[in-house]
Amino acid sequence: MVAGIVTAILLALFLTGWVWAWRPARKAEFDAAARLPLMDNEETSR
Image (cartoon, rainbow, N blue to C red; front, side, top):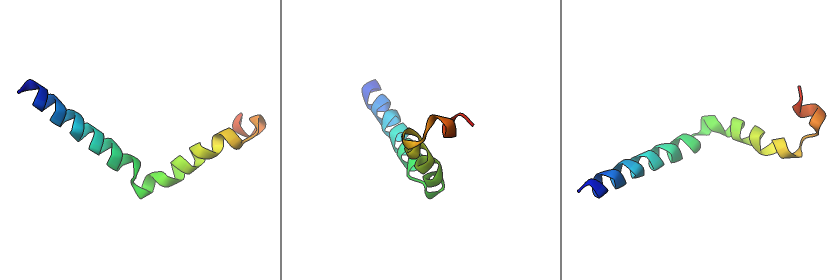
């Protein structure tokens, strides 16, 4: 019984995180984070 409750809680947390990450409002922030490795050190130190 406890294992089922823990599984349900973890599934709900996973789905909540997945929805948060895929919201269109997050796209700009994730795109900026994806470009960080390609930037020069001078650009990132500002």
